[in-house]
Figure 1: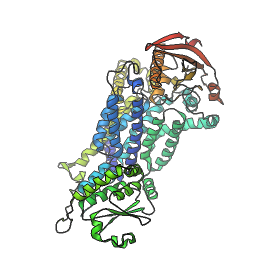
Figure 2: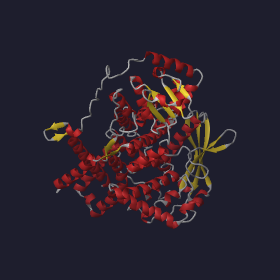
Figure 3: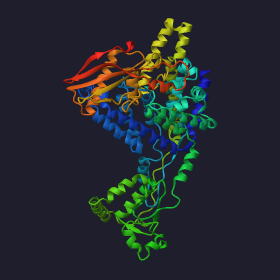
Figure 4: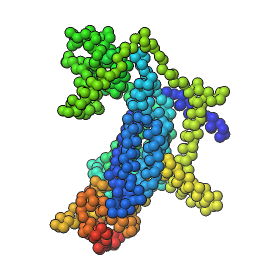
Length: 636
């Protein structure tokens, strides 16, 4: 039975691997996902002293992470631009292991998705389109007699695998928690977190006040997560799933202070966009007619390289690339010039008939490629323009001027890229066979790791307890081994439990804690942690939101963690605002709120209107943190 399953599964994966489709969507995913991840690392960099110092700015961590984080950001930029992509992806994964794997109290669920995606980026052909690697390959194999265009297709499996790991596994595991939740099974799984001030940063009462709509969104999420992993493989279900998933995460983006979580998952959904849509988008995005004619010498190696670079960068096709030979006489703007003059320099003509040469031509080229427009502005600046002209003239005068003709420059074909199926490793076993086998084993391995993690989900754990399995020697051994395996799968691949917005996050959570700075002049101001309304402030998003909302301040407060959290956030804020910690006082405020048990109209507004209660005071004196007075929150 196992052999038959493996054989059928292997056949399915082989068909997917051998099916080639346009790689544009995969390239857009690379750019979008890596941009989101870069923003995450920029946020880590800004809050690095809060996250990595023992006490922000006062007691540094064991390692200064400034340089490593900057290097990491540079590495991600290489991935975004698709330059040395595979090497950059491997280095990026190592950085992820070191930093994301070592973050504990600031961890949040998007970190796990990053680990899985960063691992897959090492192996996926994400630079096949829209990359500098592709440009390098064109330049490497092209000559004045032959312009090489590398393949732009990828295996359809390259689209499916990130969706499976980054979305499918997450939803699959999440549903095994939600099915044990009173809130989710009552249709309130979306309404409850959107109705608690410390959880949401947006007032969407106009939606949440519609009971039917709130419950519809809750139940839709349940059904969607339950069926996603089984249906996204099929073309007829992909667009409906895409629409629901995009709407769901746009809602998360609007509602909760985890914007990069929402944007990160949305970037993975890019892989579910039909390939035909990208073709239509590229067609509609292209200019209706060229804005600039660029004349180049088709027998000049350097000019050919310039033409290839421009064509690669100008995906809107605003620049018409024309060889001087055989075309220049047809352009009225070039009347009165001769071919020899045109061959000595680079000339261009805009759609108003104005002629440009030399550096001015390249400035016009940059101005017509929208993402390079700032470079054209820089080159026009006084001083830079003059230096640029001298450099350009030096290169132009010292370039190879020997013409590439049939006599001295015959056609040299590029080294062919041998198809994987033709590279024999054994008599009847090719490189393509090996890659299919690796893909099959890899997907099975990842799936088993996810099943192991789901074995520890709330629903399965409940079954294990009811059946008595957990009380047996075998059950205890399996449970112990399962948790150990999950520790490694979580760290290395981001495969872990996804008990997001469960009842335990909200039960007994009837308090909101805010910190107020008391300036020497008597003026008081809320720190950007929790604002006057009781909702998250500027500091509280992503990992910081999870840290403050569920670890510093939590349903069941631990005073030691609360005090440490207040100490660290006040120390970080004080340094950012140049507040001297030799003498600084802060007031601790508490807002008591109700715990929702059933749907209620205007619930969020009622909680926001709850009064603040003075729960104590802390101070910094000679850079030492002290509790001046404290009223136990439970007694308020």
